[in-house]
Length: 85
Image 1: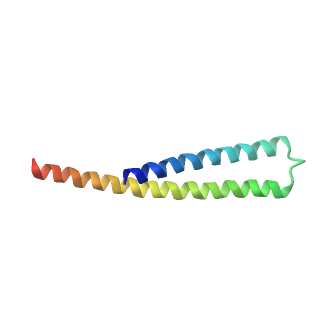
Image 2: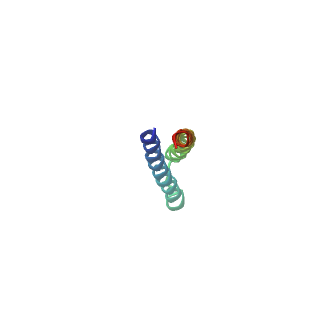
Image 3: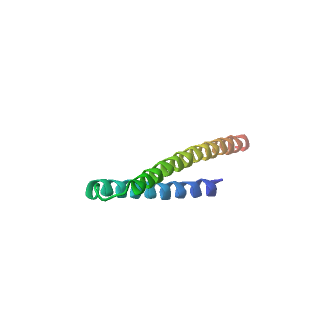
């Protein structure tokens, strides 16, 4: 369970890095070359940002669920320990 949580955490970090890079690229594109950027490229960049935001949200939701499972497991183990002390 902890391995799955750590794997999702790493995925979330990777998606956030990609999202930050895409937003920065889009900002630079709009600021520096707004007159030379084709609408197709701008639409593709905005679509990538939207997709990454959706992935990020899904990863955060999954991490929350796994975190909750880890907390419940920890509570069960704590109760188990108390039963034998």
